[in-house]
Length: 186
Image (cartoon, rainbow, N blue to C red; front, side):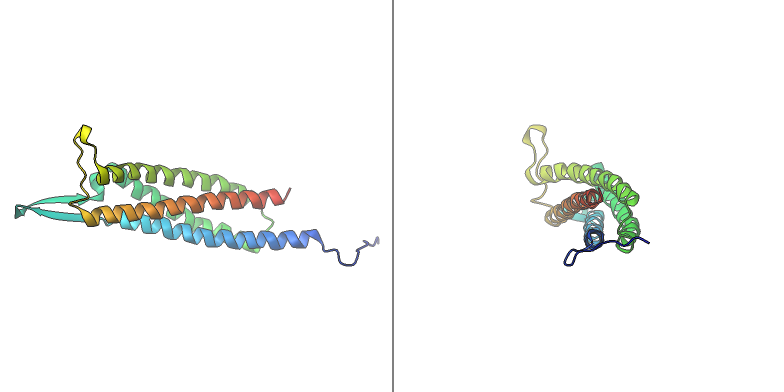
């Protein structure tokens, strides 16, 4: 039996990496919960946006609803899909807390997180273009700003965009965090 010489005061580097990776996994779990909250709140806020204004009489009304524009519908679907994915990915995040040396599942998470980042950013970008037109209008194309009339509608769709952009930042952090955890292994 061969003995391994250990110097006093020198720590085993594998113990330190396991602790760091476990800490990264806990941060990953917390960031996923934040992203779930942001995407779910954005989808709910946009999906329940509805405002009706009377015009001359109470029988003639103008209505603004999220599903009047396909970009808002895509926004709700994209954030709902991302939220569902993030809920399912919590299982892998818990697995990384328990077994901090897992590598293959981190690679899978990086790919799917990047896909969800693309989906959420596409939905948020499409909705942001319409929100900008709702606030500012475009006189060359006779698209008038509607936010002077539909105040609560515009406030809700703008607020749901903020949640979606927060989710984008958190997804970027998740990708970077997973990549950093993988790079520590090599």
